[in-house]
Length: 391
Length: 169
Figure 1 (cartoon, rainbow over the protein chains, first blue to last red):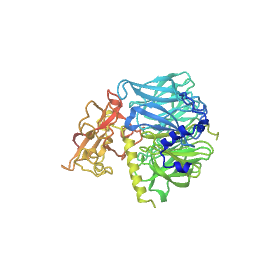
Figure 2 (figure 1 turned 60 degrees about the vertical axis):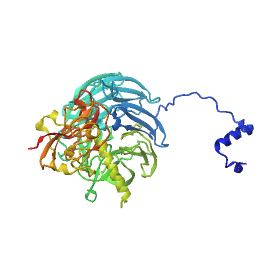
Figure 3 (figure 1 turned 45 degrees about the horizontal axis):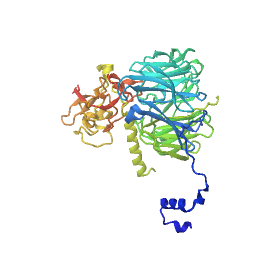
């Protein structure tokens, strides 16, 4: 039967079957449906990743997309206003915070800056705290804002060009205050109640957070970096109180904020004599996997002035000893890289201006999938947070 | 050995990255910090244009001589000109200043790269470079900041001009 029906068009076939073969209707007809809204499980999968989109060509319309790295499925999104930067997430929290900027008439009018709290299961915006309309507007760097590790306080870097930090108590839903940080910018958490900032004279400024959220400027280090080779605003956190800072030329400087003082730790280089023509580059050019101490760096062939160029390879290092373990060619050039924090980690990359999220096996480098048709200017990648193991 | 196709893809990708790192997020520093603090860009920048090998006398080309230090969308392609903002936009009072050599008279000129602000990004004729760019915590020479914040209409960045301030000493 089926063979004799093949020349018949599919619609005709369907009509014919419906008219001539009522017996085929034994399967129950589709019940009328009720439109509903999806929700997410309260506990996020560690292979889920938020892909932030700063939406450069339509900046009032910043977004973040939640993607399942295992299936490539698009799970949901957040609309986040002008010059969107990051989400503030903690592993345990039932909600996450998004500092945003809005204009009363879209791209003009009165500016309102606000920290909006979103429910992790429904992705709906809930309560919000209006903050001083001075948050840093610029390239979406990791240090532009941060939540404390326990989710209690949201810290927002301001640039007007006077520099300051706004503190929001996310539990009390109120602004604690705005604290001047002259000469220093950006926010890098150290443990639960400290952070450090990068200063124009290439020193680092320690800041402590009182129990009520008020900030106190602490010690400032000596000048740490040469004038011609500054540290980028793209460091990577490798432990609750330790970060790796990268200079333009590829020096790595570990900063240890444990014990109450900022100390310089291990210093090494990403390149050696044989690879001196290579540089680290991009918007989010490195990622760290705590459980294996692996550092993943986006590398490209280039010299001075290429610190924002995309990586064509990812180089894998043992960050404990500063030794390169592997070079891998990327399936596509990338300006951002991130790694999930679980025991079977996925490596994610995006390329600003390309609408793809590329998913790799972080252990082998095998390309697993590409999630396409995403946004406008994919910027910072944030895997779902997972409580890091104690080290 | 990287294939020719791969090299081409890489060059295109790098171009995109440079454009996006500049687009609408560009430092226009100088005036705010006082003229004495303005870093004058080296004349060599005039010859170090982007991959666009256009006409140094064409204001719609990234190779136009005045654009040696520019970052962003060219107002010339957006309803304005090298020295005017498109209708309905507001010039930023803060500028990033460069020194460019005019090949026609051989003189070096100080160029002010004021932004035009108050509408969403124009999106046409992107022109950029990262030479001399510093991190944003060293803002005087950083190009990843949006300096439309000096305007009444707020931070929305539309396009960039290249205004002649005078002959460089």
